[in-house]
Image (cartoon, rainbow, N blue to C red; front, side, top):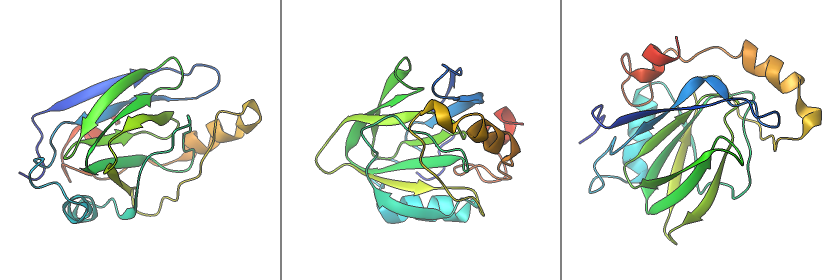
Length: 170
C-alpha cells in the first residue's frame, strides 16, 4: 500500500539550548508503504510525486545533527534502525522498512543502531537544500534565523495535498 495515512504519530521536541528542535511536530508514518513493497524506488516515487524531490540514498549519521535550511523526510527503504530524535534528551524510535519520518527544520536526529541492510531515501521540499549542524553554540542565533525564514512545505511527502504536514505545521 502506498500513501498509508492510518498509522501516523506526532512527536514534539522543545529547544534544549543546544538543538533548536521545532514548534512543529515530527511526523512518523508507520508503514507509509507496506514493508513488502518498500524499495528505494517506491520511496522515491512517493516523495517525488508529492513535491518532495528525493536527493539521496544512504543511512543516517550516528551523531546528533540538524538542518537549518531544509525540512527533511526520511523514508526507510530497507532494513530497520533505531533513531534518536530531539537531541541527547530526546526519544528513540524503532523504524522499519516502509516507515517515513518528516523532520521540521531544527530537529536533532541521529542513528543509534541499524541492520546491516538499512537504507534510507532522503527528500526535501522543492527548492530547499540541506546543511548539517551539530549543535555548536556558535551556530546560533544564525541557524534560528534561517529556520524562522524557511517556508513551510506546500505539500505533504506522503499525503500530497492533504496530510499532517499541512494540517499540523500551519
